Length: 540
Image (cartoon, rainbow, N blue to C red; front, side):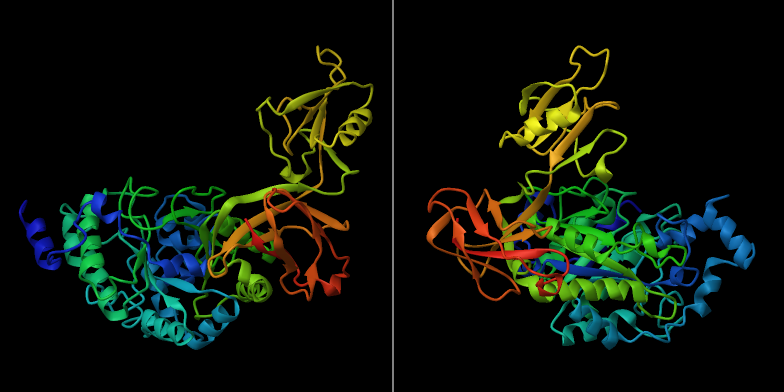
């Protein structure tokens, strides 16, 4: 048996004199196809047997329903027994997965209007149920059972008819497959998993292969390097295919193609990456238990998009589909709201690259300070920072308001802390900071504050030389906006996407910093509802 796996691999992955060899040193040198960095905005689509119960505790992954059902005493098990009875099995949901409202063309139309450019529908999640007629999943796929339709095939055709990139998500592992949980789990890899991957590649020629469910075993168990070498060298999609980093325990953020972050606030500095998030606050599968206020707002999702793109990433959202094949209205609405924003501001998102700085904080309303302490932190808008190099002593004052005024009177002062404690050696002393953070020594009873500010996020055009986009998170209320990072030239031109005419600016050509004369508009005159994009031509 020890020789069987290598022999199967050699027969499955026949290599010619190839560019890439089955090792990470070679595979990691393959460039990610350029199209992926240009499109910026994608969508994962979750549909399967779990779409029938469509229930999980709020804030948990609904698509893990079967796994949670088998967890003794779990909330899901308790709810399932109460709702369906203890003898009702997960597979008993199959006749209820009707999909009668599934319309691939309707989905593609919504996605096109939403400004989405690439897609990774779940071809198989961890329950092993496939959304195409896999030869190794007889009786456990959407053609033999449930909707009796090739979901992946129909959706791939509809998406490409709209000029969109169609890919697939694929779970490497399978929770309860007899081979995977048996005494020789490597047989699952060679007899089930690898043939399924080959079916997807040959039948649908996906633009993206988004693997998951890899963490229980190392890449060597999944034969990841052999498969990727074949994919890059011999497959029919070798020129265009994009893959992620989920190829076995220890590979995430190290090997493969783009790196992935999931429901995360992290960014990746030196590699192409993708932020993955549901529209539900923490579920990919559709969860009927999620209340309306636990779906991300359009404002939040647009903010996530602009932050991700400014830091060099792509944003891949997710919609969970109901049992009948319908996109829930609240998710469709969010997508269309983002699409309306992109209709105006998309030039600053698509076909852009990370600029020399991803963002900056610009103080506005300089006469106003937001006062808080650790029990009133303005909903977390101010971040603690223990770095003391940016702190300056302002004096000793009897009241916090005097400390505030002292900070306001110094243009370098962006935030302050006033020590109120009666038994502290620093009693009533006032400290200013040169940034918009506050010191963690601002304990209860002390008072800290900062200037109001807006975030400027930058991207640079790939299509127009020396063109930079500055995306502002809030509309300035004054008549000017100061940017510190762009270096203007004699020919610099400034405009707002969606707003007719150019804006006047002042500054010294060749020196960083410029002040833009800001228009005063009514709400109905704003180019878009959420964030706004300044186009800066001929800057560096």
